Image (cartoon, rainbow, N blue to C red):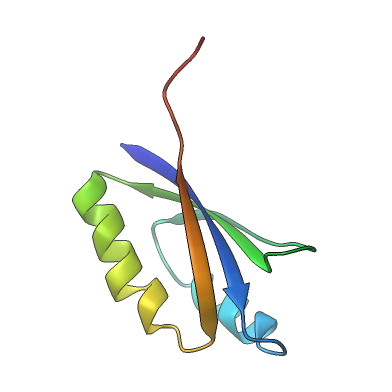
Length: 79
């Protein structure tokens, strides 16, 4: 299982519509609107890296008003 955090920048004025569209996606376990450089943060769970690629290609890239994303894959390192 891969857990990733996706930081999303939305075209100004479209935050609510993008947020509502993302609410419908099954792999997204948590979603937050935030202040600052990014507009939305997602916590995503997928089975493998192929599924994460698919999530990017078939979900995020198809949402019209997303300008940019940055994906952070959570590490299992427990120091």
